[in-house]
Length: 444
Image (cartoon, rainbow, N blue to C red; front, side, top):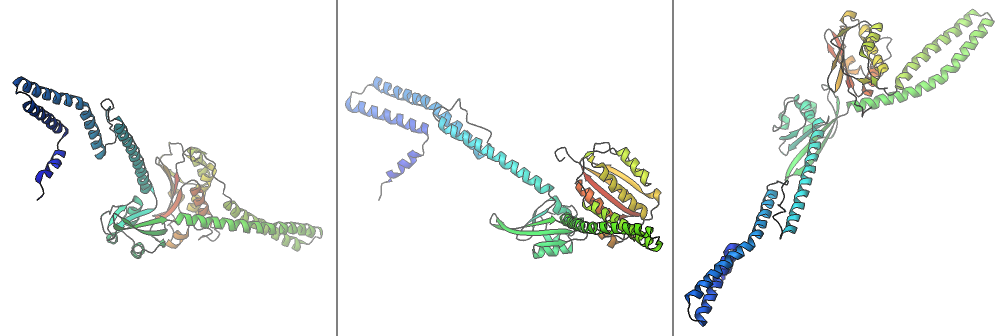
């Protein structure tokens, strides 16, 4: 059998420093006493001196090792703080001498961890701000379609602004059938939702693993404004080409008609003169028509300056009769006065042409810290759903003599000012809301 003495060393290794010092002093005392009794005559005084000397030695060793123990305690406390996630503390340099290199390493580690945590916190804050303010709807679900995270855009699109985190995705009652079908099939592409402010959305679906569990990320990006902007740019390019070709044709026609009219007068041919005059008149009208479209296609960038609201309202009331409701804005608002006047004149013109009583046409201006709302209400009976759906499409008109660019120009002006325009039937007529964003000095 193996000797049991093998258990003594492991037990000795588990002793504390003080216990080891005490064991060492005791061993020295026993050795000295053994030497005394083995080689010398027993003497109580010598025995007492040996015992007292060993005790003094033990006390001296403790006194010598006390600073080192304090340093170890300070570094141990610092390490515990790091383990608890408290990176703002450091080892007391006044108490750490022998282990200063280790203390410096721990302090450097603490500073690095503190910097990395601050950077990580700023990144998380930035990411959360982006997600919360993004117009893109974000949905995160697990493998069982339980909603784990949403942003405000997703809550507004799917559940009328109400939170539904923790619910089953397809149990949300406010979701539209077209959207529910697209999410269920996880088919990426364009979705058309007629009952939302943004009609066209792009669905993007991605799958990934988080903590060894399957997750699905759905992103719904509104594309209505981008598509409308590209459509408007395409119409403008087409208008510029057509206008250029028509101008090249009308100029010689007008010149020939004028020359023919002069020649007919010289020959006293009245019928021929009237024919050339008619051609000249039609060329002039066609040129004015073309110039109106070209002006729409070449809308210049806004010239920003402070709006003088009393002057603007007086200029509008000189052209059309309407009632101003509420107070004028008391804050300074930056916009292009000419373009803003043109926008409101077009809307007032449409309100009067709708058959509304001029006394029932009202304009209300509402201001918030970051946007301005211009709300025009008439009593002309509103629009049909088909007309309302296509009212902002370029060259679409329901008027016999309309050109179809009035509301499109209004939308172009509003978007150039960082805003938007919306129409809805509000008895007894149509309500048009123009939203303008507050321009900061940096944006100008």
